[in-house]
Length: 382
Image 1 (cartoon, rainbow, N blue to C red):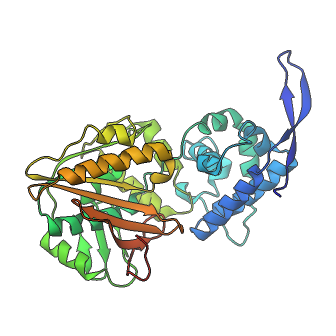
Image 2: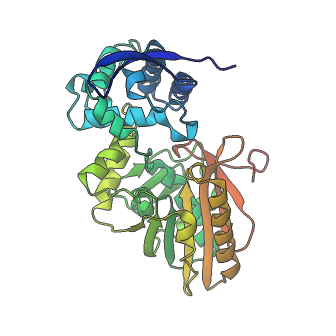
Image 3: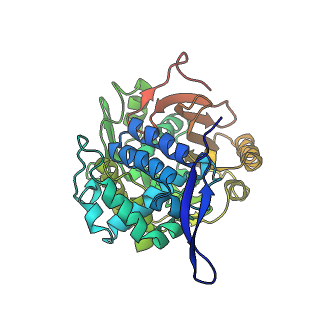
């Protein structure tokens, strides 16, 4: 049985009178602790330390319980912990939490893993002082637009081009700010595999654990550049990366002690300023319903770590549209589906479907896309 956490929260009535009432938050503190473990595993000791204390603060009825009131029944898919952390990070990036900035490497601060709780009093005070800002931030879905995942997507694209070398129409589902629609402007390197502009502001170094697969090295040599004739995507709430608000949101959801990720994002924002894409504010199924294969091009539909946010009924519609495009494809009007998504066991895998052929699992990688590892039949699931 899951424990019930009771938080005594001071509320103000419509008559302006303050009084205490008990707010129960079943599972919310547990969700924070679970996300803390995930952050530790994914290389963010800062967020791991903070979330452990957030869970305790919820149980004690502190400022975190107050700001999260109303989200007691949020599912894990809501990623409420990341919304909370993103809202606070946005304050730091915007210069509205100078005390906390001293602990955030994203703005030049320093987090000492030997003293993981040093920043907690300042974090807690920031939540208390900026509750209205954070409450507004909690209404926004997390959108990282993780640039590192382009590492897998571009590998799938090169493999598709090795089979069907046509100019590319590049389409992305759940594109967020569309940064990965500019993946051909990034630089990739890993062992014998190097690809992309040598002067790119986005460098995905050590892209592969060990040697890159032979098929990728060969495909990169065959296609040193890619001709993209159109690039557009969809998202229910697309972000404008060229606006201040959009840039702030993207930066806020990067974990502040992962400065390499932040550097990649900053580089991708520079590329976005000179490489336009189109983003439509529609769902994936409705977006694909408007798409047809076109003669003389390879229509590529790709997505990364977005499947979990699409309701099952909607995803069945997406699959039906993908099947329609696959069935309509020819050698002259090609189609490829490239996806980097977790399987049922939670392993993140790159899969490619070329034309009407079955999906083939090509590689696997951590959730943020680096480094990748070639998938062998005994190690991967289709």
